[in-house]
Length: 512
Length: 57
Image (cartoon, rainbow over all chains, first blue to last red; front, side):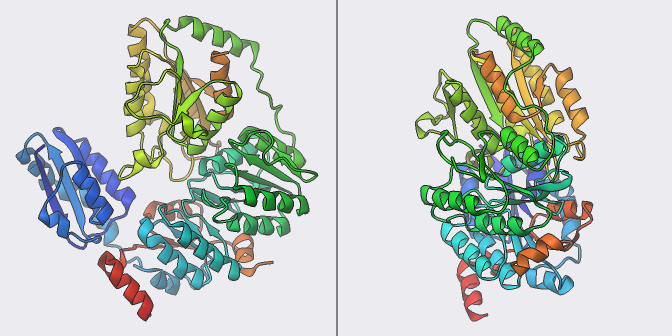
């Protein structure tokens, strides 16, 4: 395909800004593909993947901005690039500020800093985190692609200095009511939380809030923390902090199943803890994580929140998988409207934990589900290979997000996938999640609404009905207006549930 | 009680945000004292040069 490109030497912009520029360029008529990225080696490979190669690109440095446009003709691509300054305007203004350019310079301005929030590209992240720890700062490390060796070394240094490293690949934390990364507006209260699963921690904290209670502190640890390689260094440090924290009365730990050795140490630690602990190890079989006295085991995020609120002296709403007569009527009605070919659920998730938890719920209902991030490796979905089973896809996984915005920020990929799944005559149900809060899309429902309506219409034309089941993770304090988001879904005929677990249970009921 | 973690939990957060500007904006929205670092790859992103600089400093 014809292409053209521009290289701007020594113009560095962050990835979220560049993805915004890329999106604006993609809206330009005639643009087939485009890439707006810094000249790192990994980014040059992405360019080669879309057929954009040139000696000048090979020579570009990580500080150089590369903008490439693939179009029907080279001239069309050239014309788009001629307007580049318009697309880059916001960033140029941002770059012109007098902000410091290094941690050291930042520390000159804030000598009393207690926390470094780090979101630089993975290959540089450990270096910045190390400098922050050396300067006595706790670290929230959002960056991913940090090696296990670096993670271990950073967490070892943090332990020596009595500091905390949240991450790497940490999506969320709530410290004293302040949300870091992708967090929700959650009231303060007696429940402390530790989670290796980002959206799991968001769902837990919003469920606690929506049940009338609140969160003292919630620490993200990074997805690998409870592996035997890392040994739970952040989890143990956070547990100690919450144990002595006077505002915390109950502690919840939310994770995928820990490594065997780490689980044994963790269980012992729970039993020795001076406060009740709720353990929710998603994807674990019933016996894993089973403990004694202090440990209250929860199999879903809803159950974890319910138990924690109850243990903290609150009165959570009754928890139960049983649906009302009205909801069961709905099940019958939806099922009766499907064509004979419509047989399966297609779950398209922005939140990785929601994909994981849904698989667990499907498995317990004896429904076979394939996934790109499967509970059981045998159930790994292969793109392009038709599967006669349910599919639950984590659209935030690396294969969808390298060089592209995460579905929590931008709905483009999920929109395309919804329309594609609607073309599959086997699709009966779409299962979706919508995540509100700081740094998430300002209108996650609006981002997908047209696609949902179009998908429903196309299935209707074929003589069936597309059942759309959704959950919203958020609170009334979130800036996106949870009530408005819910209303928009309901008006589009979407069946909205208060949590991912209840939405997944409802899907299972549809296939009972 | 660990001092660094204790400070983080007990005192108002003072943050240095290195990277995505929107993270600093969301902290400002929550009335957190935050300074934004407009980070650029050190030594032009040259890995060997970075290692050398780290070694020398």
